[in-house]
Image 1 (tube, rainbow, N blue to C red):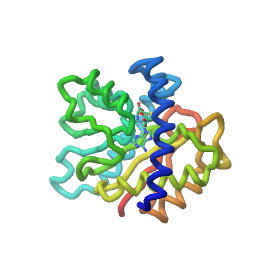
Image 2: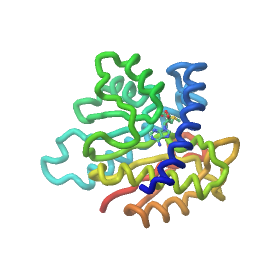
Image 3: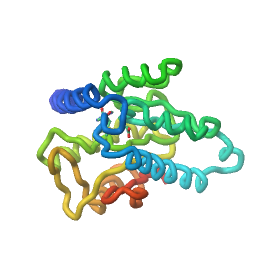
Image 4: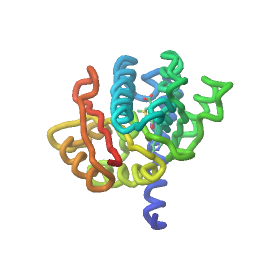
Length: 224
Ligand SMILES: C[S@@+](CC[C@H](N)C(=O)[O-])C[C@H]1O[C@@H](n2cnc3c(N)ncnc32)[C@H](O)[C@@H]1O
């Protein structure tokens, strides 16, 4: 990445971190602490992304491969709610997980919330090793920018950092609207435009409505 691009990215991320750090400090390790408006909306996003991964995996796995755990990296893991969900559902015999976040306050919260599993969480913006899937839930919803094209470029750069570390694909969600827009610091993607962009940049991309979350869509970007 060019030096100037890196400086711009750094400036954007400083502003993103300021917003999330303030929010986490006021609301704590709760859905509201990462700007979700309810736990149901947070969990339904996880459920839909997990279902996309499971379906792809069933379709792609050959023979014994299907018995191996599915490895995922959550990019933008917040305070570790997905990790907690996988634990509560006792899914760790079929799933292996690590979470990264650009915000040190979020990773510190993960370490507090899971003191025996601190190695699962790291300040970073990409998987720490090759995984089956990178997963993004709400990672790019909050933006400090006002220009949709600039924000989409930022997103695509971020996805490129993860793509070569994602063996089977990436899953991601966005609030969607008929026209791409940024309203009150929230990015709304145009579904068809994002599908076309991701298909061109990475690989075949599909979208499904996120379970019971109005206006939200979950995207699968696959390798084959
Ligand atoms: C809406 S929160 C969602 C947190 C978590 N995925 C959940 O659903 O509970 C978005 C998270 O993404 C993180 N984030 C934003 N941009 C990021 C980036 N480029 N790379 C990694 N993490 C990022 C934020 O710090 C924040 O913790």
